[in-house]
Image 1 (spheres, rainbow, N blue to C red):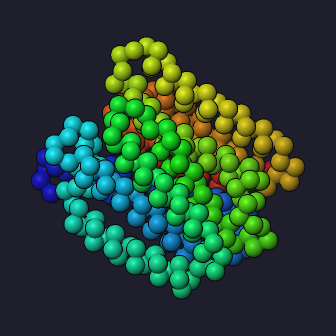
Image 2 (image 1 turned 90 degrees about the vertical axis):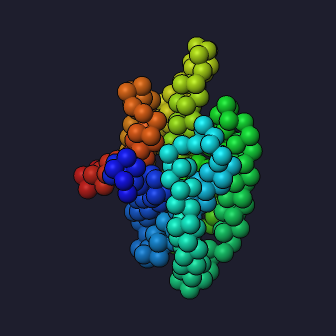
Length: 289
């Protein structure tokens, strides 16, 4: 690659769409440990990582095709995917074949009744993504909410499959861990759009509204995580809530200092804000309760 086109190493995971799969796999481990799974095979992690990579690459190739023809909204990750679209499409074909093989040959039969719901979410996400591309100046709240919900559902579901005594509705309706993770994912995905929207606008009320749309939910999420940690009588889920609390805190801090960074850097740091809490979880799990 010519020196003028060479990308910094820290940006490559984002350009290669490896950032989201890494976050998904890391948090799958968090869910598995929190729910004390006695059996959680490698294919659960491989299937999840491949599925997330397939969705993200497909989304970026779709965005790139819609934004092609020199559109000023074409971001670096879109340009990268469009420039190497043949390689990404070949990678997609291999990843889809490998993921399907893992699901059919290695995953529990229970996964099939959950894949329908996950498929509906993914289809809805791509539909909203196409609609959002027609309103480039608006924050795609509906798309971000569905994206965060879909991502969190996929991660938690791949751990929930091995909790054989629980139904999927226990995950969706009764799991505090799942709800907290959903909100954290939604806010993480929404942060970049809100920052971009605020940067484009010269209206102070718009900037204040975008600021409140992020800081208020982050504050409430942090308060809820701390409350749940204190109410956890068996203390087994406390490290999980500490991870959620640290994730909300990191996003809040990043929001306060975002003016110091370029948008590409903020995207990477937003991913870091979801990975550092995994280290917090590991540290809290090892410390005496």
